[in-house]
Every structure is written in C-alpha cells, then in structure tokens.
Amino acid sequence: MESWQWFRREFPACTHWTYLNNAAVCPLPSRSRVGMESYLDEISNNGAARYPAAVEEPLSRLRRQGAELIHARPDQMFVVRSTTEGLAVAATGIDVRDGDNIVLVEHEFPANIRPWLPLRRRGVEIRFVAQHNGRVLLDDLAKAVDDRTAALSVSFVQFLSGFRIDPGPVAELCHDHDALFVVDGIQGLGAFPVDVTAMGIDFLSADGHKWLLGPEGVGLGYVSDRALNRITPAIEGWLAAERPFDFFDVTQPLKQDAARFEPGAYNLAGIRALVASLELLLEAGPERIAARILALTDDLAERLRGAGWRILSPRDRAEEKSGIVLADRTDLDADSLALRLLERKVVVTARGGAMRVSPHAYNDASDLDVLMEALGAIG
Ligand SMILES: Cc1ncc(COP(=O)(O)O)c(C=O)c1O
Image: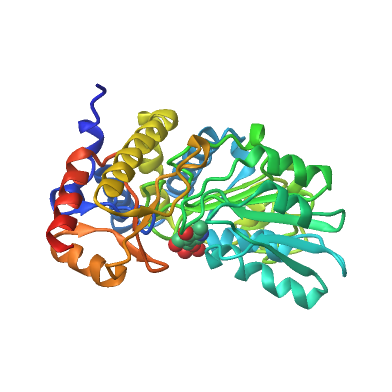
C-alpha cells in the first residue's frame, strides 16, 4: 500500500478537523502558506526594489506548472482572480452576432451561468440543457448545439451531483459545429487529470481554492489558439499591452498570447501560494491523486449505503465519478446535520437538501471512520 502520510502532513487542518469539504474550500497546505508568506517577506522588506524579477519569477512558474498540469503551453495560460472572472473573459469577449446561441446546462453552479446571460442583450439566445439525475447527456447537448452555437460551456464536474463529464466527445460535437468548448474546471482540476489538447478544450477557468489546493482569489485560465482569435478582451488593461512599460503609447497592440487577458496588478501573495500548491499536486502526480480520490469516495459511498443513505451522485460508471459524494436520508435534515457534524469537528456541506462529502487525496480511511461514527451518534 502506497503511503500518503507525507501528503497528509502538509495539511495542518487535519489535526483540528475531519475535513471532508474540498468541493467548497480546501484547507491550505503548509508549503502554500510558506509561499504566501514569502510574498509578505518580499513586499515588507523590499517593496518593489526587486521588481520585475519578484513578479516575473513566480508568474512564469505558475504558467509553466499550470501548462504542465493541463498539457498546454505556458503562453496559453493566464491568471484568473476567480472561476467566474475567467469564464466572464470568454462570455464578454466572444465574437457573436445577433441570432447566435450559447449552450449551457441547467442547475449548474451560477459561476458558469450568470456571466453568459448578458449576451441576451446582444441578441444571443441562451439554451439550457437539462440534467437527468445529476447527469449531463451528450445526446441532449447534441440536440442543443447547431451551426449558430458560438460556445458550449459546461462544468467538468457538477458541483451538486458530482457528475464528471467526458470532455472529448463534447469537444468533438462543438468543433463539428465550429463552436468553442468552454469548461468550468474548478470542481475537477487538481483531482482528475486534464489534457486540454487531447480533450479538445478551448477555454478553461478554475480558481485555486478547491481541488487545486490553493488559496481563494487566484486560479488558472487556459485559452486554445483557435479561441484566442475569437475572444477579444472586454477589459483592455494596461498590462495587456505588448510593452506595458511603454506607458504613453496607448495605441500599441495587445500581447499576442493569453496574458492579454490579465488586465492589471497581480495577486502576488496568491500566486506564490498557488505555485506551491501546484508543486505539491505535480509531486504527488495527477493520476495517483485521481485513483486515491476514487478509492476514498468508493469506500465512502459503500459505507453510507450500509448506514441507510441513498447515494445521489452518479457512481455506476467509473468515468463519471468525482470527489463529490452527495447522499441523503429522508429522516435527516441536511442543514442541521451539517451543523451537528461541525460541532463534532467534522466538516461537510449541506447542498440541495442533501449531504455533500468531498474528500481529497490527503484524507484517509480514518477520516471516514470519524464521519461514520459521528453520523451514527447523531442519526
Ligand atoms: C462549478 C463551480 N464553479 C465555480 C465555483 C466558484 O466560482 P468562483 O471561483 O468564481 O468563486 C464553484 C464553487 O464555489 C463551483 O462549484
């Protein structure tokens, strides 16, 4: 049996809590805290005296690591301040004409819905595809996409049901109709391997604060070469210019790569922390992390079933599973249950009237023992 103790030791939260809520906000690993503190040291001791190196070094590391994680090129990566902001880059900048449409999935987390809705004011139709017991079906998407579809945007993993979509066939569908394939990656990136090139993803956004094990307020954006030509930055920031320090040439062209979507000053504290988080993920290996999360959630689902819970997450097909297990028991109110678990130092979330449990690779069977014991004591 492979030991994950070294990985678990990165998470001081494990000494205080049985923390099973990574689909909401992950606890920060120690090395990421050190990363963030290194920024505080830098800025308090040196101000900007060591610029531009103090900016460019962590920034280019983040681009390199992000590219390695998702099999892209560093020049296709840009830094986002939230998943929403990244998706809004696509929604506000996409090349659309009156009568075009955008295909979305009903009841997704609103970060992947609201940024698209203002396109209605430009004569764009927003088409919603229904979920079936938390699953998103390719057939339904195929019925919604046509030659006037400018983009289809979907979550890699559904925030409620935990359904994980297979991006490849969706990409094929989009490309058959010359539509962009946009992905809200936050509920899957860091937990499951992503290869944007092989999967045909055109645009991806994911903040750091869930499965990427980073802080809030900084994350990864990716844009494919074909999408770069079709998305014009709605915000033309000073930093997006080809030579940003040539201050008085305000008509100079924008950068030719994804950095054109980074408008102004960076969240350098967050970037340094996220660099450390990605280092941790890459060290552990995305495939091994995925296998570990699947083993833990399989174990969890089985234990919950045994204790009379109904598993609402799609768990029949391996490729649809994720780190999210949604479960309910008709005799228990999920909101008060989550509060009572919290009193016992067990952290899960109530979502949609059910209990959502979301272990990451630093969790282990002892956490599941504690959860099941607490549930037994409460219910
Ligand atoms: C699918 C999904 N997208 C986005 C977010 C968060 O978006 P943001 O990073 O903009 O806060 C969440 C959860 O908070 C989510 O579950």
